[in-house]
Amino acid sequence: MSNHYFDPRLKIFSLNSNRPLAEKIAAAVGVELGKCSVKQFSDGEIQVNIEESIRGSHVYVIQSTSSPVNDNLMELLIMIDALKRASAKTINVVMPYYGYARQDRKARSREPITAKLVANMIEKAGADRMVTLDLHASQIQGFFDMPVDHLMGAPLIANYFLERGIQGDDVVVVSPDHGGVTRARKLAEFLKSPIAIIDKRRPKANVAEVMNIIGHVEGKTCVLIDDMIDTAGTITLAANALKQAGAKSVYASCTHPVLSGPALQRIEDSAIEHLVVTDSIYLPEDRKSDKIDEISVGALMGEAIKRIHENKPVSPLFESKLSI
Image 1 (cartoon, rainbow, N blue to C red):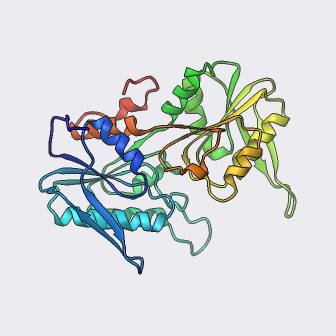
Image 2 (image 1 turned 45 degrees about the vertical axis):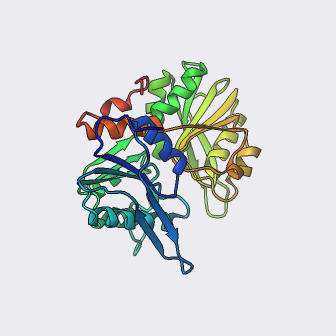
Image 3 (image 1 turned 90 degrees about the vertical axis):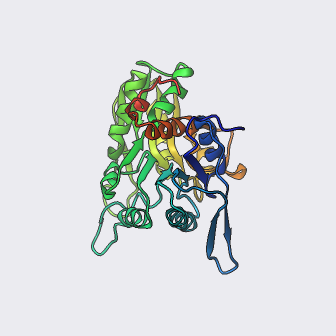
């Protein structure tokens, strides 16, 4: 495609974590991806080369820190350093998936807060802004001393269900745990549906978890929502519990499909009819399934980049039916 965005100083570069999404973001903005190369030496060291001038440019670097998380994080840090030394005017990190976000607090003595360490490294390398999507813990925004634009996947997920008529009182949006209630309530507002919560409790040591459902799900279409699905243990157990409680059908959704280890097989064997995910993390063919429907965040993130560059508000992107 040819560049048709009005400001040639806006440049978008992609590293290795999710090139297909980067291409969609660039297309939504109306620019070609910038020319750069990333190579890894035989000893594992990473080298980044920027193959065009970026002096005085406003640069957006697209990189999810998904698996392999440490390689992808180092690629990003090295790229930021290269951009800074090449006199970019601003360096904006676009990180659809923020790795290490689950290490956001000290759960026990002598533990690190790695999400904060990652924020420190990104800032110290020379970044000026962070654009990210559905952080595991929204307070991670406060780990940065630079602007953070925290986008939401719920409007896109809501549109998926609205387009299929899955809405209203016959639908129940379900949070798989107490921590996801705010996220579930947001989706429920879009769908004009009630919510339910799954309360997981372990009665005593060496006794299986008991899942109590708070809310009415019998005869309803249930929509589970979480920020990420990793090994899929929680979400599939929740789906099976809903089905046993009389749910008519069970859908699941998440923004970040980590899908590691036994996740795919668990989803295939579960009561989940369809799992709706975004492309914040690249899914190779061997991690796909007929049960998994992927929606793109490319247009959303592209619109966010344009609004940031033009000093326009990003908040309208939180609305369900915004045309982007």
